[in-house]
Length: 283
Image (cartoon, rainbow, N blue to C red; front, side):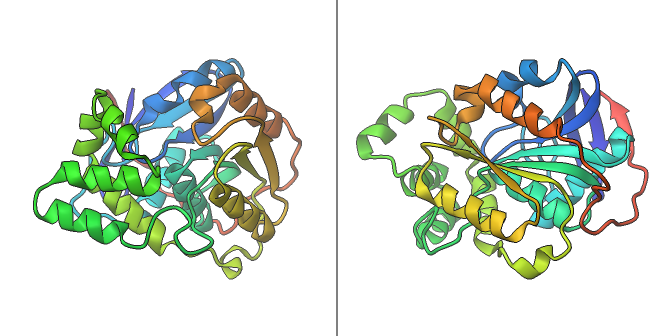
């Protein structure tokens, strides 16, 4: 376990495994670095895997004032702390949105893998319009359970029966406790705009991964990204959905390895920026 201090001095926990060229793994909403465990064995034989806990998750710290741009800085801080120059990055779901934003902001990313980042390309693609207000109102009256219920039924489209079964699981209390973080990330998704002009001159080799059985909104996002990211490619994981890291870890790892084996020439971050030495502490 390594502790890295981000730009605003929030402590970020990172776990390292394997040996070889480094690759930073950025998890999605409502989870932590442990979500990558199924694919580590398939990647760590030839790569050094660094799995970060994003701020507010796992063993990482947090800050009372949240902006998604701080997540971009966190990713840059982790890469700079690795100390080997530009680094390959894999982002899942909301972690993919953060990784894309970090690359756009100039983080030293060599190659990028994005698995189904939830960037809306049409109205109510990922959640109903009322969801954010519903969750905010529930949290303002101190009802985290209601906020979690609204999220599950609005995003996962869970039925009353499915919700009842989910609430019997141990994970439900974790989801309830994380409801404020889920809301702030949902708000960041709502504000994220995918504009072609932001990616002019994009030169980062990018793999866009999609579950073959995922709902159509994910495919719409992947196609939109492919249209505006020069040189990007799409890999479809046959028979899989948004949870492919867990349900098909070998397929996921093989797809990432195959992409990283491709020879690239002159790949540099889209807009490089000055880097500063980050403070690192063993933990």
